[in-house]
Length: 409
Ligand SMILES: *Cc1c(COP(=O)(O)O)cnc(C)c1O
Image (cartoon, rainbow, N blue to C red):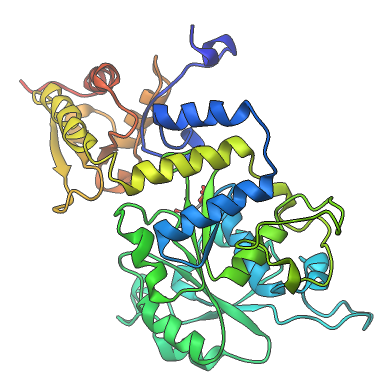
């Protein structure tokens, strides 16, 4: 019996991919084995993060890296690191960054310059550290009142005495290019924090994004890398990664006994032992660290690439099972095969007698529940991501969808 059924829950057919609310990515057997093996013994967590630092920096071409509890945690920790540097008094004050009001302590520079068109729900993670945004650019294309995107000079014009850094959300369509933003920021001695949570695939982004010179980059561990859904990576400049590690790790040690790995934390640069930092609630277990490192190696070595043909086979078999229904099936493929294919089903809603929203809802309420991608509902389209599917669940999905559609005469 399914462990979820024992709890009175129905396991679902997930055709939405590695989304957090449905459980993240499927963990390969080698990753699960690593998780179990890691649970059998104890090691000092900071020593383990020191090894992770070496491996992540090799894979990403950076000075240092840290395993976090997800890309959102990486963003809070990255922002915290930029706000405090290695100043342990500042670490203690977060998320209080501005003037404390009673003149008992001066405020610290706390503004992050951020393109208005890149604002998104995940940026809450950056504000959680005590950062405030200074928005630049317009949103003219969405407003249908212009054609221009945010431009590099706008970042430069917004820099002032209270600027702590620059925040950038990386995407294939992001503008201006990250290299331009890094150039402006570095000319003014400011660090750049990059949200690249979902930008793997392609695999080459592990190095391409950091190679722009960006100071800190956040990746998810529970998406394409396929480690636990509550894992992530923060990588970049050594002192900043070090400041992030200090604000996440358990600090309840004795200064004279404390011997952190010098590649991650250079004790000689610290004036004392900080107390638990703002990231203490984002702690990562030894099992999660080892699992993430195992998954990162598999991902980076291309171990998942062989699944491309299997995924195509599954999506084609679903399309074949729908061939006598009033739908159009289209499999979108990346010419480089650097990301998994996606099946897009365009529904003839008149023929079906219901719209795609109702179909989606009915499938979620079915037995077993089926969760299709709902990002294209306004185009009368449903999408099928093959990441979590196998032959059995793909057939069950196609049958459940057939039952919602009218069959062509
Ligand atoms: C998924 C995502 C996040 C959050 O990543 P987690 O690893 O789930 O914390 C942040 N930013 C963007 C752009 C994302 O796509």
